[in-house]
Image (cartoon, rainbow over all chains, first blue to last red; front, side, top):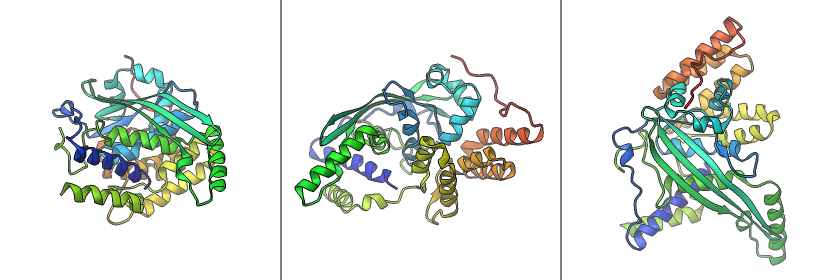
Amino acid sequence: MKIWKTILAAAALAMLSACANQAPPKKDFSAFRDQHPRSIVVVPVVNRSTQVDAPDNFLVTIPGYLAEKGYYVFPVHMVKRFMEDDGLADADLVHKADPVKVADLFGADAVMFITLETWQSSYAVIATTTTVSVKYTLKHGHTGQTIWEDQVTTAYSPQQQNSSGNLLANLIVQAVAAAVERAKPSYLPLAQQANAIAFYGPEHGMATGPYDPLYGKDY
Amino acid sequence: MNKIFVLAAAALLMSGCAAKAVGKYHWGEYSSSLYEYQQDPTKQAEYVAALERAVISTPSHQKLAPGLLAELGYIKLSKGDTEGAVQLFEREKAAWPEAAKFMDRAIASARGASGAGSGNATGAAATPTS
């Protein structure tokens, strides 16, 4: 499962920085202590970027990260369709709604609100870099309080993934990759990268959920 | 101790073992097939096939990821297989107690829609307002 590459990369970064000098400031998870949710419903993603497809595509990458963190995650596609039937298709509308009422529709302990702030590709002939900026907010389903939030800005350049011994071949591959990335940005790897940082990265991260052995040990 | 851990993690990443690291759950091709299906609604069959493969081929040392049984049930319902859908919703509920309320709602709405043939498929309460 590909997400493990990103999780291990983020976790390795955290360990390396911890070993290099002092441990980085740990995020405060005390808000979880008395009211730790077991389940999370992820509602439609608000899009402030110029990429029309980005929110739906981002949504498919979330369950893996949250579930492996130890939470029950409601099925995102089914939830999206049920919300459309309930007249809650518009993400902006849902984000303004009372989280307690949204949680109650599904019997969820918590609601995850995600806003894609930017999703932008900057193009130079042999290098396209796509940068994403995401805001995550987790609100408790019984109290409506925000118990966790995070902001991630990260970038992805697919050209970095390729190299052969031949310099000219490399340049051609890179130019093609850059053009493809510009035309159709790679949603999945970048979304996975952002999620790995938000849930596992140094100075980011979220409290571990009930299905993980570390539950209750990282407040 | 720390040094060994760091070296081991670095070795894992470099060897590409990371891609095969065992997570808690079996996901199959859920994420990528749902992505494709959202980009192109004609790819529904591939999405369904990916879900079915994931459900059938869960290895003995892993549990099937949360939500996948429900996702498959929902697609079956949309294609008219009410009983198949209800069975899957029941399985999701049995595997994940947190899903009980939502699965009960889905089962009621599946049976209601097929029984009474009513236009409104959900038994939802009032739309939440802030």
